[in-house]
Image 1: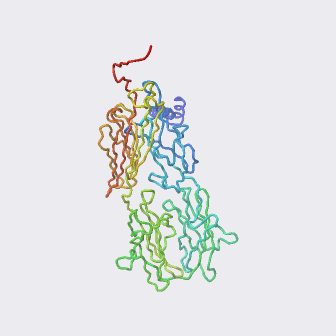
Image 2: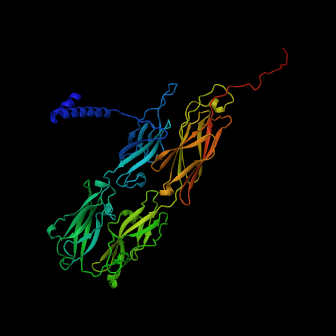
Image 3: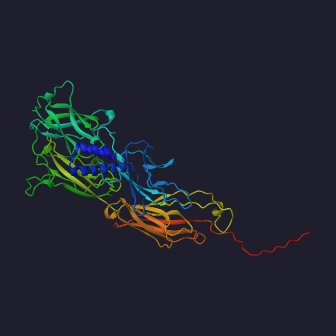
Amino acid sequence: MFDKIFDYFSRYCPTSPQASNRIKFVSNLLICLLQLRNISCAIPSTVNSATMVTFVIDENAPIGHEVGHIHLKDSPTPADGAASPLTFTLQDTSYFNFDPSDPSRLVVRSTLDRDADRKLCTESGWPEVCSWSGVIFVSDGRLLSLRVVVRDTNDNVPRWPSARPQDGPTQLHISVSENCALGTMIDLPLASDPDIGENSIVRYELVRTPGINAMRVPFDVSSANVHNRALYRLVVKGPLDREIQATYHLTVAAIDGGGNQGLAQLTVHVTDENDNKPVFKHLRGPDNISLISDEVKPFVITVDEDVPVGTKLSQHPVATDEDEGDFGRITYAFALSTPDTVKRDFHIDSDTGVLSVRNALDCDTGGLTQYQFVVIAKDHGAPPLTATARVIINVLDKNDNAPVITITSAVVPSSSASDTMDSDSSESGTHMPGSLDSDTKSVVGSERKSSLRLVENTPEGKLIATITVQDPDTEENGKFTCSLGKSDEMQLTYVKNLGKLSVYQLSSTRPVDRESQPELRVTLRCKDHGQPSRSSTELLTVHVVDVNDNAPEFSSKRYSFQVSGLI
């Protein structure tokens, strides 16, 4: 192989002595890389580290579809020579789980819809990136950090919010003054497509209407990509005369990167001209005449995440109009470019502009921490004149979640059957060979009980359970401290953080004799740093599993009997 690579570089590269040495170096390096490419390495995970395993899968993959295989080096072979195959337990099986017939094969457990299921995308970066994270417990005590990236597929068609497939194209209406200048641009309602990137809307177009000469239509559509979002406006490219033609009927298409398109019927009404336009109060300059751009001075509102649905916000942008009558009467509305999330969670009163809450604003369960949108104030002239105000609503996190404790017990092998009865527990004489399944329990914001197992006389340091704790709140409200009650037999050890998940291990500190201590009890408490703080408490009960460590004994060293009767 070296001769072929060296010959190739020698023929097409400079052949000075210095170059020849470099060619030999590059050739050897390339051979090493090619050899390394075929080597499969398994990096063991210790108690203080967690190997990251990453898989990539398309959304809408069918249930049972393979996500990937976990490949690890087996644990060291015991002294008796009996190899123990590794088994894997996934802490959260909401979306994925291991195949019972192949314990190392991870499969899809439920529907994956990255566009609609916000709980699927647990890591930051959504909607551009959707990734789910979890923890895998290995039967030998190792930990794996699992990350599944869910790729977007083009499974949605562009559609205007008011459109339903059975109703046909959406009907859009706008008004344009007959005296507007050539080149005037008018905002148009945006279509929506839950897909991301090239799978979402990439452009808008006017669709030619059969029987109508395109040269006689005084409008065009200007489409542009702004902040990775396709926007479009209607452009006036010819003179308008209401007396000649008062309405125009056009068809607009929203097209995604895969060629899918949604259609809307656009009716343009040519109207007479209006006078003064509305002005938002917070955008007036110090002289009360000049105006400040809404890009320079947005209207900022702060609201708590636990505000009840239906609450009217104490602040909202207010506009005035110096005209009289209908020309001075103002109507408020969200701009056509307003994201669907804003219209889903907030309502605007068309007469007063007051904003109210429509849905729960829980930023801990996939809700947004900030909303940005534009409010339009429109008078009732013909045509109406408008003013815009950029609004920012910041949602403040409240300490409304207690730490969530999840306990996964270690696998405890059963003792073998006994052939005699002795001072051990009855199980030692009757229990059939087998093993106890691992068990996972969760506790949130209260006191719960958890049952664990520990084999008696096990040396100190034996893993009893792996404990994971997380708090959905943010900043100080999401930080917490965990502590174990007084115990001479057990200790709690912090392992590491996996994102917002903190991993602990509960282990023994000395051998325990079941005959004197059949069970151990200790309290685990996790308390967050919020004001006031919230806490979760778990009562851990560890059952000491009996082993056959006592020989049978007679209660007395000498027995005497008397037998009477006829011989």
